[in-house]
Structures are given as C-alpha cells and as structure tokens.
Amino acid sequence: MTEPFAVPVLEAPALVPPSFLARLWKLMSNFARRSPISAFWGVVASSILIMALAAPWIAPYEPLQANFRTMSDPPNAQNLFGTDQIGRDTLSRTIHGSRTSLVVAIAAVVLGTTFGSIWGLASGFLGGRFDIISQRIIEFLQAFPDLILAMAIAMALGSGTTTVIIAIAVTRIPFGGRVIRSVVLSLKEMAFVEAARSLGASNLRIMAQHILPQCIAPYLILATTHLGVAIIIEASLGFLGVGIPPPTPTWGNMLSDALNAGLVPPWWLVLFPGMAITITVLAFNLFGDGIRDALDPRLRGSF
Amino acid sequence: MYAYIIRRIGFGALTVVGVSILVFTIMRIMPGDPLTAIYGPDGMHKLSDAERLSLMVELGLTDPLVVQYFNWIVDILKGEFGRSFFRAESVGEMVMRRGPLTAQIAILSVILSWVIGIPVAIVSALRPNSLADNVVRFVSIVCLAVPGFWLGMLIVLALLFWFGYRAPLTGAALFENPLITFQMVIGPAIVLGLGQAAYIARMARSSLLEVIREDYVRTARAKGLSSRMVVRLHALPNALLPVITLSGILLGFVLAGSIPVERAFGTPGLGYAMFTAVNERDIFVMQNLVFLYSLVFVVLNIVVDITIAWLDPRIRYQ
Image (spheres, rainbow over the protein chains, first blue to last red):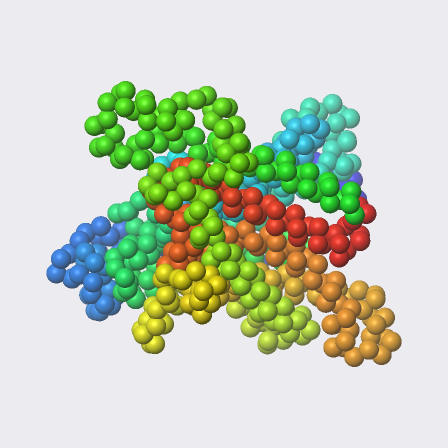
C-alpha cells in the first residue's frame, strides 16, 4: 500500500523540470510506440482540429455565399462536394461545420465533466446527507435519455451556441459525478489522507492538495471518451432543429436542410456531412480509447 | 426477493417524482412566455394586454408555479395529458395513435440487437485476437460512430435510387395491415438495432472472456463436456447477466434515438411527434412527452433490475 511518506514524492518532478517540449515529445513518442493505431487516430483527430481552426483559409468558398448560377450541382471540378439548393459550396460548409461541432463538443464536455467531477469529489469526500441528496439528483438526471434531456433544455433556453453547449453539458454531469465519486470513496480510506488529517489539514486542503491530483487521470479519460457522444448529440440537435440555427453551417443542420429541401434530398448533401460526423467521432473515440489505456492499464480491453 | 422488489419500486417512484419536478422546472425557464411561441412575435404585439392576460389565465399560466405543478400532476393522474397549442388532438390521443409504432420499432430493434450482437460476441470471444475477432471489433467501433439518423437517410436514398422503393409514410391501423406497418417499422428498427448491437457485442465479448476463465468453466470442461456445451450451458447464462442490464440502459438510447431516426425515415411515430413539438415550441406537448419517455425508461429499468435479481440470487441478497 501507499506509504505515508509518499506525499512529498508526488511533488518531486516539479523540482527538476526538463523542458516542457522535450517531455511532451517523449510522452508522444512513447504513446505512438505502445499503441500505433491510437496514435494514427490521434493524428486524424488533430488534423480535424487544425482543419477547424484554419477553416477560413482552407475552405475554397465562403460557406454562406449563395451562387444562383450553381444551384444543386452534383460534385464536379469546381465544387468537389457539390452545391446546395441556393448554390452554397458543400465542401466549404462541411469544413466550416467542423468548427461549430468541435467548439460545442469540447466546451460542453469540459464544462459538464468538470462540474460533475467537482460535485462528485465533494459528495464523495464529505459524505453524509450532502452525498445522499447529490446521489438522488444525479439519479434523476440519469432517468432521462441523453438526447431527450438535451432537446428539452435546448428548447427551453432558445436556440444559440451557448444554449446547445449548456444542454449537452448537463447530460454529461452524471458521468463525472459518479466516476469521480467512486474514485474519491476509495482514495478517502488511504493512509496518506489520514496522515494529512493528523497533521491538521482542513477538509478543503485535503481535497485540493491530496485527492484532486489523483482524480486527474479518470477526469481526462472521462472527458476524452465523451467527446464522440457529445459530437453525435450536437449533430442530432442540429438535425432536429434545436441546435445552432442556420445559416451557420453545422453538420447536423446541413443534414436537416437537405431533408427540408424536398421529398428526395440530393445524395451529395446527405453523404458528405454525415461522413464528416462519422470520421470525427471515430477518430475521437479511438484516440480516447488509446488515452484510457495509457492512463489506466487496468481498463485495457474492457468495455 | 419481495423486499428487494418493494425497495426497487420505492426508489423508482422517488425518481419519477424527481423527474416530474425537473421536467416542470426546465419547461418553465423558457425565456419569453409561451404566448410568443403560440402566436409568434408579430401576433404577440397585436394582442392587447387584457387579451394576453385572459389567455394566460385560460392556460393556467398565471397561477403560482407550485399550483401549476400540482395541477399538472393531478391531470396526469386523471389520465389527461393536456393538449397541443396547434392541433385538435390531445396529447393522450396522440400517444395512443402514434405510440404503438414507436413501441414496435423499439421492441424489434432490441430483438435485432440480441440476434446480431450475441452470436458475433461468441465468435469473437472464443478466439480472441483472431482475424474474425478484430473484424468484429472494428465493425462495432465503426457502428458506434455512425449517427443513426444519417444511416437512415442513406438507406432511404439507396432504396429509392436502386430499387425505386419508398417505405409507406402513412400506415393503416396497426393490425389492419401488418405488412404496411412492418415496412414502416423495419427501417428504423434496423438502424437502431445495429447501433445497440455494437454495444451489446462489446459487452458480451468482454463478459464472456471473463467468465470463460472461471473455475467452474474449467471444471465443466474437465468433466469432458464439449466446448460448445460448456459455452451454451455454463458460460453464456452467466455472461449474459451484464448484457441484460446494458440492454435496459440502451432502451434510453432507442427511445431517444428514435426521434431523429423517425425523422430521417419520415415514420409518423411518437418520435416524429416530439420533433414536431420541439420545432413548434409546443411546451405542453413537450412537457408531457418528455415526462412520458422518462417514465417509460424508469419503469423498464425497474423491470430489468427485477429480472436480473430473479436470475441472479447474489444481487437479491445484497
């Protein structure tokens, strides 16, 4: 078991910091050697991120500019992914769509998981009545299927980017709360917590100094594994008309527009945005699996 | 066993109460009042203040929130789910008419997910890291990444292009013409079933791998049973317990997933009604439908938990 004197050892690496870049490089090359497949998907995920950041420079056309000479064109040399009913370039819209998707997904997951984790940390550590009430509230939140809860909140708050972020974040709270709480419950019994307490540390100090650092690995695992789900929920909300409203292109509302356009949507308006969602979610899921295996080998190969 | 059932139902009832409070709160934080949603911003300005007030009184929106909440609960207990702003049909009638279609989709998709997921998991768990296992794992990972509604749109398009076939959009009554109903239901069920099958296959694979290493499985094999019998009679029944629990959790995935998927296929089920309500900002319909969906989800999970306790005495006696 952990020795009571292990506490200062935790802070040792900070005393002799090798340069940050060197450490990062070492970390990444280790990761790539251990799990090349996850590393490949990590590269895919980062290129999607770069694409989202550099969207205005990469996209061949303005995503919002209608062109009445090229309406509903199938894919051709000028418009590789074709154009929609009012002549906007599908490729440019798909590239710009990655921005909204990623911003919303990342912000929602970070917000929801952080809030849930802090809540779980407090409820696991403090225990007692606070814990019981917290557990019930989390149970209530989990009684809603994810998408339905997100739809209800997005509708109630009115459409907009912030709304969608909040709606998705709320559905992520229970996961953070539950996982971190169970981690804290087992940490709480460890000898180093008792040692800290016997030295006269307050609850707040023990939580912040001793328990919190141990929760970082599960927190990162949670956040990365939930990115894919968040992207799918965002797309579904857009598809159902409660996401980010048009004309801002998102993958979800592009698919919704395609369906609204007529009885039979042109195939290129359906195929490409959906493929973008699939590839992005695939990349984030597999990269997340790799990160989980690297941070917590016990979970390797499990669900 | 009875003590367990009673405790489980008690917690379930508490959850339902909590859920109703949450739904009510979410539906009342709407910025701008519901009248704007009904009459539109233009219509809103044409109404005089007195008219506005009388409409609000008529809808019961001027009462204190607590009173409104209890009125709603009393209505639900009486079996009245309120009406839509935009349609003559009451929510109760809507559920009776559209509900069966969505229920059929859900049941069919759960059956499909087991029929696909379990055999695939057995193949993959018996030879871990073989070619078949890796193919299965990759396909299931891809299935988790594909949004169901997009797959649905692609299926509709492909059938139309290559076979000139479109599933009927309006059905006869459920039992009058089963063939038409089946055509309406099978598409969404396949899409939702595939999504669940991926989860089920992953769960069943890892749980089988765990069970196969247990002593009693080795004993069974040492007795001279063929490995097929060992899997079928000894390993599988125990390995399926967590899969049943997962299937219950996945019902939420089906209920929620059927909303965009029904839109993609144009199936006139309850999910489509939800899509319409959310777009019309019809808060009374939304409030009741969201509550109903969660109620169904909670009740089905209680049923699943009790089934598990019945199958597995270890849980019953905890």
